[in-house]
Image (cartoon, rainbow, N blue to C red; front, side, top):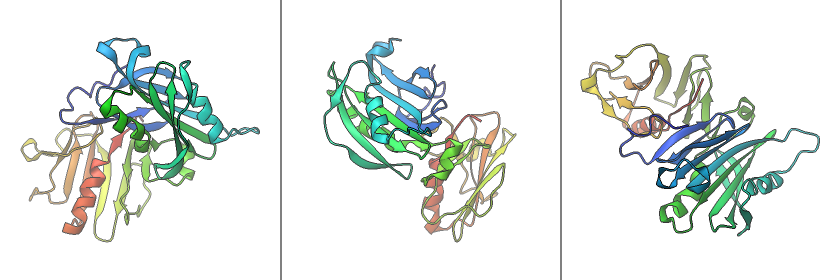
Length: 282
C-alpha cells in the first residue's frame, strides 16, 4: 500500500494520511507509507533500503482506535499499556506520563524503549466511547526523528461520527470529505449537506465540490503550501474574480474554495484556513 501522490510533493515535508480503519487523520514525514492494516488500526513506516519488510522500519506510527463502551470499560491508562505491548519487542516505560492536547482534546503521552533499542512514545486520547492511541517509534540516533516523531500525534484529527460529541479543534465534513482547522473567532453560520461555510465578522469562506476542470485559469495559479496530497492553487489577487481563492486540481471532482469580504486583518487567517485542508475518503 502506497500513497501515489507523495512523489510529486517537492518541498513538502509532511503528508496527510487518513487511517480509515481507525477513522483518524494524521500528518507524517514524507517517505512514510502504510505497511500494515488490521481491524481498527493502521501502521505506517519508513523502510530501510526500500525493503518491503515492515520489521526493519526506521520509523513507525501505529494508529489504533479501541472501543471501550463496554460494562467493564478499560481506562485510557490501561489502553496505553496495551498499545505499548503492540510489538513483541516492547520493553517498558522510560519516563512519566505527560499531558498534551490532540485535536483540541486532552491526551496523555509517555516514552518507552524496545528490547532492540528502538525508542518511542504512546499517546492516548480518551474520546468517551473510544480511546485512540498513536504509537510512534524511531531509532535513538535518528536526530530528526527524535524531534519530529514524538509530536506526530499532535497532528491527529478525529473523524468518527461519534467524535462529534468531543470538543475538537478541527471541523470534519464526511459528505464533502474534508477537514479543516478553525481559526479563533470563526464560526459556522449555516449547516449544509454539500457545502462548508466558515465566517468571522467580515469574511465568509465556502468549500464546495464542483464537477469542472477549469475552475481557475492556469496562468492565474499560485501554489498554496498544504500538507494534503492535493495541488491547491490560489487566485486571491485575480481582478476578474476577486472573491475566488483556490481550487484543487488533483481530483476528477474538484474542491472549489471561495471567499467574500477579505481584509488585511483576515487574509492571514483565510489563507491559513485553506492551508489546513485535508481530504479524506468519502
